[in-house]
Length: 211
Image 1 (cartoon, rainbow, N blue to C red):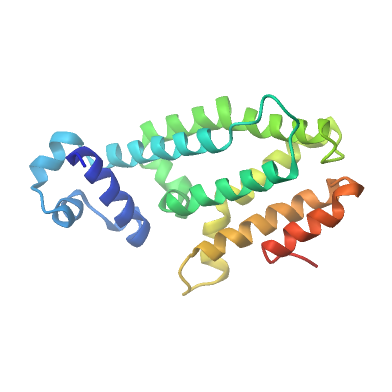
Image 2 (cartoon, rainbow, N blue to C red):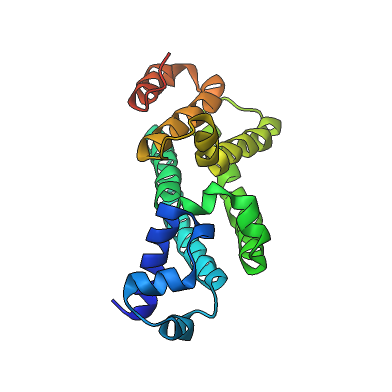
């Protein structure tokens, strides 16, 4: 692995384990056994490392949320998208521990995040909901799509932070992500088509969210 990629991988590991604010470039260099000067040759400061890791997360979400183009949306697709959203959050979880603070300290990251949210992710989520309506998976008025998308994104974006507050002293885990999926399913439940409710109940049970 090239030094550039090793720096990113080690930084992601340390940020996830200790939190981004607790990790300096000197910590990263020591963890890798390289000199600070070698690290600075690739990244001028820690904010540049964080920004690049966010771009990796962005590519992950783009690849996982690609909608099928040659067939109707299916229930398995919807569950797969939820799994992917929280899988991405788990792999890049430090980004979500204190997202507002992270963005405030890193203007290039804030610009990249807002651009991704407004130009890509928002459109993808709206299209996903509309495709689910067209496929008969959800019974949803057009005027309800935007509020639902906003609520889903609020849960996804702040779920790990909520878990930290709701269960102080307990480390965030992959099980936290499963609870997040269950919470999003609860948001979708009122709009699920009648014929799909038995399958939806099974999906809720899968994530520990059945009644």
